[in-house]
Image 1 (spheres, rainbow, N blue to C red):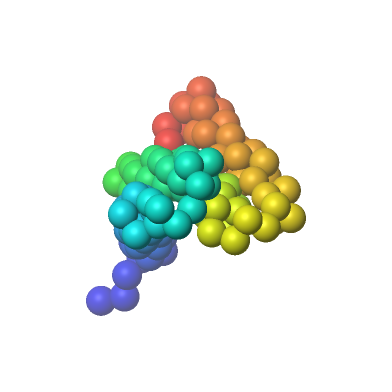
Image 2 (image 1 turned 90 degrees about the vertical axis):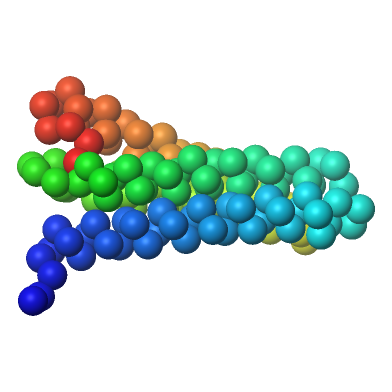
Length: 134
């Protein structure tokens, strides 16, 4: 049986959410245990912040997969893309900053935060339009 488009989309968000959770836990544990004495407290804070935001948005992706049915599939897809882009840009730039000290890439951190906000705003609008988040 060929999976439906909705099933494929749901599987993508499950995989993306789970991957974000995996990376968030790994980065947090690596920073707390493996790098505790190797990087500054400020850098550890950046990793914690990146991991926290990545975890929350990984969970949001899983929620989109669980709720993603009905007429709001487009809103879920846009929100999912925004959450995934936010995790890559926001959390990724914080990890890069913490591990390399290179501040040039940190300029994209606000773009990642904006992507997170866009994802949530799309779900708010979808909810008010009566289509829910899924």
